[in-house]
Length: 270
Image (cartoon, rainbow, N blue to C red; front, side, top):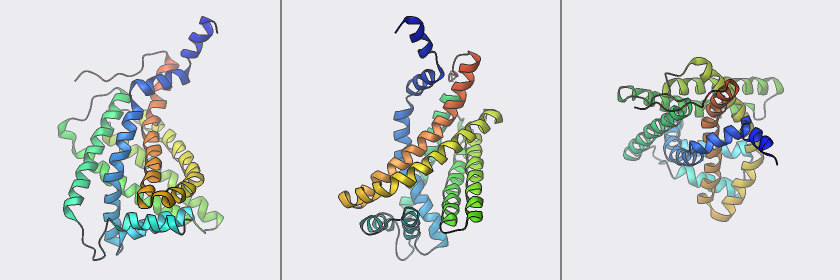
């Protein structure tokens, strides 16, 4: 390989994108965000659903099992995992709930810092911490709405399925725009909208991947490790989702800087 060809490859968009991904340490950050999301967002979703149903954990377990067609060991392990988080008497463990909420709030601030480094904008000021609180509510509502729309298309006719998928895309786009607007308010709407569109495409890819991967993974992990094994498969799913969250703005900002021949955004000194 001659020097000219090597330089062209290193200057290509995929090479620049990969290099920036590792320069920003996004893989390490994604693992941390996924782990925190697992212990923060899911308990809040269970509590929110418990307000509407007698057993939020069982509702979530049944919804996941029905979605992926799980039965036997995998269904029992999934039920054991989620129902252990709730009480049969609808007693909410307020201490655990408070810690989950604080963890979710910390998650929003960490994600905001990641976004700030990608877009090259200042981090949220302390006076803007309320944005993280609203972000938590948006994410919980998103998970509930997305789950309902996914369940709606199961066993439905073609027309209702198309409507449910369209509604899911709209929910994803609106949630991504709202989330970015909350966590990086100084970024322009064109960048936010473009990032939300790329994120929506990535979510569709995850949905297809999960439809193929998750049933086999959940079944295999449940048979080998029981409820703990289920957490491995769910964490992998969350990690893929987090990577979409942070790679969407990375793809957009890197493309713009590469196309215009300008340096990649850098976080201003605070």
